[in-house]
Length: 254
Image (tube, rainbow, N blue to C red; front, side, top):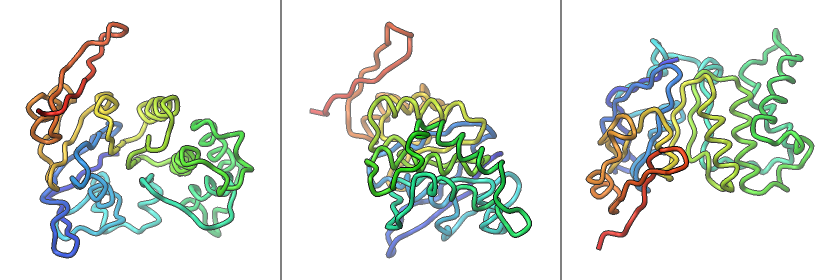
């Protein structure tokens, strides 16, 4: 499913956070959002998800404006993994992931074997099947992050939005989650800090001072000039002899 936005703007206490952002993400595409801290990445994701209502502009899911859709319908199409989403409730990992099935349940459509299968599959995909009975409060930050992703996968969305999905994860699980996300047959937008990881996305959008200042393939977007002007670093591009992929080494600007 296509996700698009036109001239999105949002402010906090009169301070512009997102300014005139327009983009389109094709069905099945993975778009990475990169930019310095405070550039507006997380706010843009919240606008795209409908968690925040834009002061100007509009978000579209396919051919339908997001603002005209019910929250239930949106949740059947779009899942969100926020950077920090905690709970004070005494729940198990199984309970947390089962919440992902809520948009599909009703009096006419009670819990079924299909929901059991969706939850079991989601837990397996993030390597958390053995944690199903564990209390949420006993999990590490990385384990909680994987459960959040499992909850989103259990929704079986057509669009997936993730804010720093590798946050708190060790390198093994960072790579496995990014590989999982890349292989999903869904439209994906994810905010990332690691620019070498971001190079694996189909396209990158660069946020700077609330504006989308670049949008294109990683090799088009990640130039030495952009990295200097937006991130304040010098960059050297190297070729990994193991697979021929390009990697970036960063240097402080002297």
